[in-house]
Length: 167
Image (cartoon, rainbow, N blue to C red):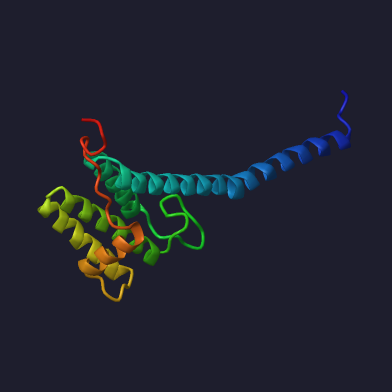
């Protein structure tokens, strides 16, 4: 009976070992990096969508986008030394609280503009709590409102159809 040469056996062992090492490296470093980049992309898209909807969309769409973003932030744990799927890819606990304070504040302003005072009060309370977590010197709603007005600019009134020349 013919036995394969030793070099062929070692070649097969080497190939299997190399393949196993490649799979290990891919699972250990490449897959988490790909997941991290996907999480960064998701966070970026939610941020952009919520702010653009807040600035440009009608009330229901703006509220939905901001609430989706706030839910995403509330479900995220702060980043850690070794990133995991349930963590925000970039924000520390203080940065997450800061972003939640601004988002809840925007929701409060949106509700105020719609005359929804009970909903506005709820979002102001949440915004103040998040501002405290972010260690703001003055976490009160008046300060949050002033900050958002400086950051976002004063709300621009939309022209009516008659003023725009459509009627």
